[in-house]
Image 1 (cartoon, helix red, strand yellow):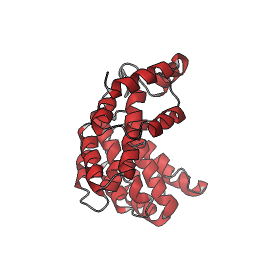
Image 2 (image 1 turned 135 degrees about the vertical axis):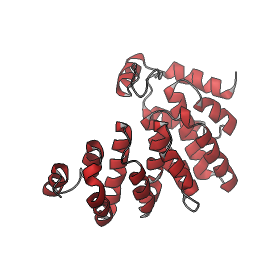
Image 3 (image 1 turned 90 degrees about the vertical axis):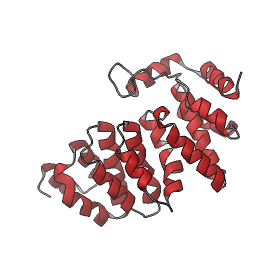
Length: 235
């Protein structure tokens, strides 16, 4: 039994059938839904984070095996381990983790998996490099790639660097997926929390053609009168 198999077997023993059923509904695993066919064991996130600390020295090959598991919590655990390894690693290890991450985005296939990892791996790696990979991700047919593109920019937002978010948000204005609308609106809102003028500059130009969900998320924290003006289309 490989280490990844050993860890997955442990996760299965820790599972909770009742919670698993709740998670499968919450993460839309039914036919035709975005998480169709995903398998949950019913672990809580704090449990998974505790295991990530325990297995933080797991080798990269074994972490990737775990990431390729059909079990959601195994993939989540693998990503938390990779995030910890990236944060503690030297440039060579960080580069390995970044490229392995992008080679396996089809397994980073729900919003919680993207949100727990993209800003901690893709964002930091590209901070002092070309952002071209973000544009490629934003143009991908895979919804998870597109969410990775916008969520990676949270790393820059937290450092007061807003241009990457604005650029990716422009590329995603016509996106058809609700999960992208929510993520993009959320990141624009985070920009506005730090520099309202930057967010408003973007909104003044684009808000009339933004998907309603994206706009609603973007203006959620605005003063009520300002928020309603945007939602009514007369800002």
